[in-house]
Image 1 (spheres, rainbow, N blue to C red):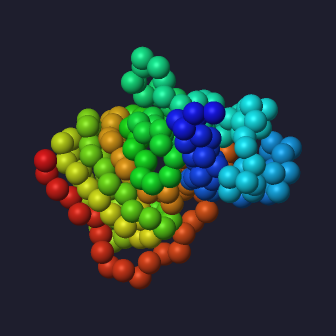
Image 2: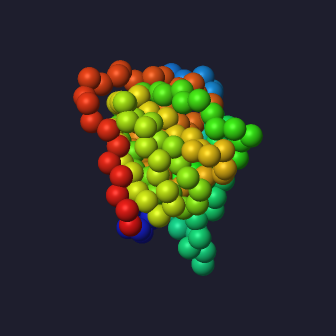
Length: 210
């Protein structure tokens, strides 16, 4: 086996662990979903067992990601990011990054509504950064109620109660960066949101014009 293939196989375990943790799934939950024992899953992630095609197919189905993404295989001749929208809380999240772990990029679409909604703030650990592409965003963070226009940027600590919605009832499109805690709270449709602990900090969103 050549060195390049060895490197790919050695990276599979850490990649599988990163994907699972990014989705906030325990080994026990993954075992129940896939029918693969916890000990086998643990050995796969630690590199003590080589992944077989059968095991990878189980995991690809459980995570709802292409098999190539699990093993880190490049898409020959295709550098495009293959997008699969995720709908949650009445909004659409379009993933713009594919690497497991770390900060994740999404395009977020807030649909138009007959009249602006009342804020329902949530909290979770982490930090978020956003850039408004189109529309007018209403951003509530702690005691601050801010309007963010197109071409403006905001960033905030998500341990503060926060809410994003349309300021005028029109559709809003934005780019948003989540750390892992934000991804777990907002994106995985198969798992309920677990509110984080409210922070006593008095900080609020910081808005910057481009």
